[in-house]
Length: 126
Image 1 (cartoon, helix red, strand yellow):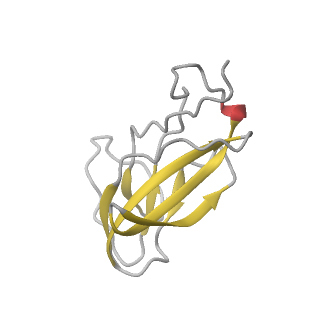
Image 2 (spheres, rainbow, N blue to C red; image 1 turned 60 degrees about the vertical axis):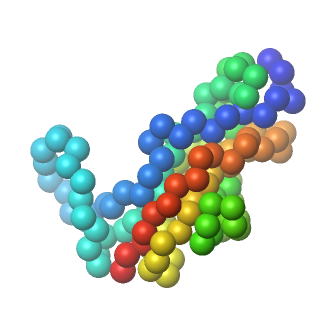
């Protein structure tokens, strides 16, 4: 495996989701849930399985993710460094309500960073 090749962050399920408390069964129709004051908002993504050269990337080689946010897609700052390759979400509930752009970078155990993911724009509510 070419360990010097950067890997691609696969952003298959990248978005802002609302999670409510409480449990119980529900319909599996994937109907969006509107966030309320008591619901957490989070950013979620899918960990990469290949490097940019197409070679396989084992999850044990992945070290974590860096979350970037800002007021425009070309003006992002690091807001979190998640040093856990199994973590694929980030809680946004502490952010000030407003519109933000987000991007995610994966990094491996050698410290190599992926290119930043596609940026998405999301609105944080109270």
